[in-house]
Length: 114
Length: 114
Image (cartoon, rainbow over all chains, first blue to last red; front, side, top):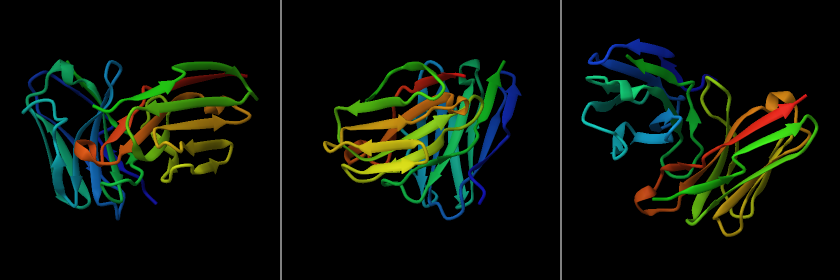
């Protein structure tokens, strides 16, 4: 079975540009999570969805960040405008439900904002 | 917020040796998860624990969910070079504002010398 799919795997952009990260969760999973990983702060939860509805976006750093989940098999994380401090690895994860089941991570998108 | 204390921060061992790492928390968790992350990849789920006292094995890996629900350990027996990586514990909260959110430990960096 396919795991969580993320695209692109790498993204290099210039400050001020819009960045869109994409995620396809594992089929049948109804919870989706976006994380950011940096050396300084480790893994941080940005936002999570349950049944396509955003449940908690308290981890989204600023209004420049937005996330959508238009259907059960697709989600996007958008940064507009991007800044150098947004450089990090962004992971998407999915699970069967929000409660207490294991989360499965995608391979991540490595973002570098120049 | 909730915090997980993971130890040790790093380990340097000889191939064939056993490894033990643990996580403790001041809060109760309903689920404990152990992940391994290789360079350039996303965290991969190793073991999921859902009941206090549960002891689960996955090949050479064994993990336990502490009786108090505030701790967990991971053991690796007869280490091999491909065990190299960063190991993370993660807990899913029992309730409150952290419901459904994974809390990660700081990670244990494992180096195995052939």
